[in-house]
Amino acid sequence: MTRIGALSRRGEQPERKESARDIGMHRWIAALRRLLSLLVAGALVAGIGGAAWFLRNRPLEVPVAREERDVPIRVFGLGTIEAQVASRIGFEVAGTLAGVLVDHGDRVSAGSVIARLAPAAQEARVAKAEAGLQNAEAQQGRVAAAFDRAQAQAQQKRAIALRRRELAGRGTTSLEAAEIAETEVVTSAADLAVARADLDVARAALADARATLQAERTALAKHSLVAPYDALVIARLREPGAALVPGEAVFSLVDPRTLWALAHVDEARAGGIREGQPAEVRLRSLPGEVFQGRVVRIGLESDRVTEERRIYVRCLRCPTQPILGEQVQVEVETGRLPAARLVPEAAVEGFDGATGRAWVIEDGVLRQRALRFTARTLDARLAVDPDLPAGVLVATRVLPGFRDGRAASARP
Image 1 (spheres, helix red, strand yellow):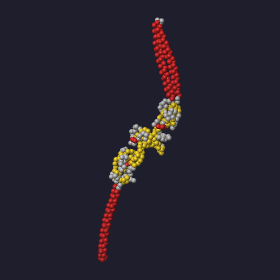
Image 2 (cartoon, helix red, strand yellow; image 1 turned 90 degrees about the vertical axis):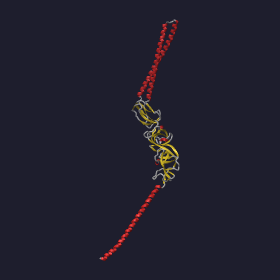
Image 3 (cartoon, helix red, strand yellow; image 1 turned 135 degrees about the vertical axis):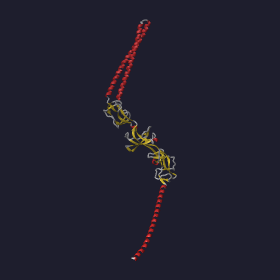
Image 4 (cartoon, one colour; image 1 turned 90 degrees about the horizontal axis):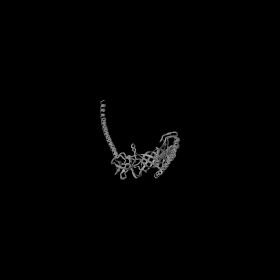
């Protein structure tokens, strides 16, 4: 037992020594691992920092505006098809509509009859006026004969009075007879004046009868509605049998030669529009067709609510069947640039219609500077001022990482 116990105690000492070495070794390995971890972490941080520095400071390839040739400058507007000459016509007198001779879609020539009122009542008025004229003519003839008689009698009385005055002077007749003859001259003169007044009244009555007949005939003529010009019937508004009041519309007419497109253009874009400029018109019902036209009128009053200007475009080649009120798109060409560098408006900060701030490449680095723009295209691109030096390249897109002073080059 004692020997075995002693052996056991002796055997424990080596085992205790091996455990100490193991512990030291483990500590050394752990320290080495920590050092390696620190070195790896440091290297990783340095790599990430270096990569970030490189990404942040590496030269950027930037898309820039290139010069384009023969650039059209257009202005866009929405509007409708209208007619410069359009009328809603009806009868000037009241009556019952007896006949409608045309329908919508028909073309009528100036002066042609397109509708009629029942004429019986007015024809009776014309007949009555004709009878009144005949009566006035007869009355005027009778009064004229009486005037001629009074005039002849007055002349005779003057001649008798003159002879009796001569005879009284010679003593062959009495003075009283001469005075009576002179009194008869005065009386005949008064009768002649009355006859002349009656003749004037008769003549006035005759003129009135003629005017009345003319008025009634004119009213009868107004029972026929005629086209005021060569027109296209847009709408037929009344049918036979309708009782009409004066001025009530029966037809809606337009002159097809005066059709035009009325476009509403933003005031900010309308400053360059002039009469005579070419334009393109697209109808909503014919989206695949383009109708050429020209600006013929520019409204002198803008809409105070929408802040738009009215532009009138007449087509050079018109659609075969235009529809009034149909929506149209109008593009007016206000000019052409022989050469220009174009920048999307989205790449310009604070654009006010003439100036704005944009990124440029100058001496190999990025700069943000104020630029002037001379025109705006229909696809929202801005023409850079041609006075800008060619060596100053204007970015067409703002990329992540843009900052003042960063190295940059134009993208091929």
